[in-house]
Amino acid sequence: VMRGGEEKNARLYHSNLLVLPDGTLASAGGGAPGPVKNRNGQLYFPEYMSARTRPIICDCPRNVNSGDRFTIKVDEVSEIAKVTATKSGASSHSRNCDTRWLDLDFEIINKNTLRVKAEGNTIMIGGLWMVNLIDKDGVPSEAWLMGVDMASLP
Image (tube, rainbow, N blue to C red; front, side, top):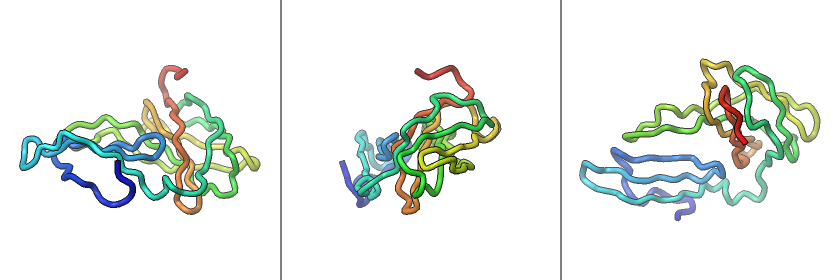
């Protein structure tokens, strides 16, 4: 477990990096075949993990269709600078061919509600997405897992 700082081991071929819903980064593996064989992993806690406050998603749909508008209930909208969506990954051989990061258009409805527009299906492709609020200081909320164009999530 590492807070701030740098990666302890070289993460080369066959390595993975994954952003977890709470904002922690998990890195693992790398180097085999190659000069090192890192059969280990690390958790990295970026500085924002120690932020005094983080935006809070109180409620959000579990499923939406691409292109739809949907509402997010939040603790307080006044500090929200961005609403983002990150596609869950499908990684192999140091490449994550399925990850996407989108800034979603949103409008403030009232002090606790945002209306958000999902992108169309050629950009916000079907699957599981992590929705985050990012405040004016760049601090993200914990992610809300939301399905897009897929069977209902419980």
